[in-house]
Amino acid sequence: MERQATAVLRREGFPESKQRHERSLAVRYKGQSFELQIKTTSGNIAGAFHRAHQARYGYAQQKNQVEIVSARLKSSGLVEKLKTRVYPHSNSKGFCGRMI
Image 1: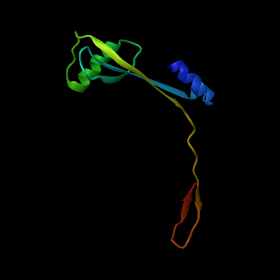
Image 2: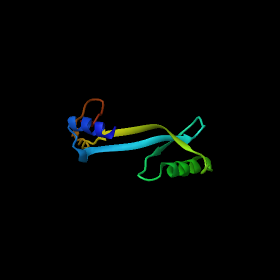
Image 3: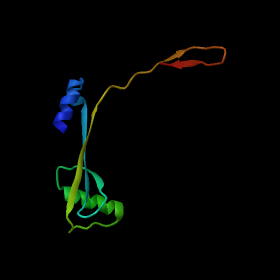
Image 4: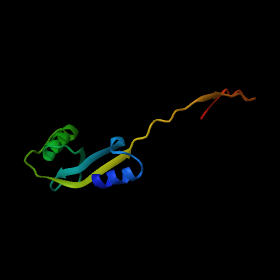
């Protein structure tokens, strides 16, 4: 997914240095009907899920199996902040500035 997003953003004019990719996984304990979104780590996915579950619900079931329900990728092309200027302008209603 990330290779494809990188190529699309490159075609849109964003070099890799102006791209940001955020990976996440929806993970749950096997048999549960709800999942937690965790940002992927380069390490232990199960460990990251146990920590997230502990933080959210106050407990973790370290011996239970975890399953990945879905993988997501959010990709963005970074643009420079637009510069704004205020031009003096007045009219009969007392408006004294205009932003462009």
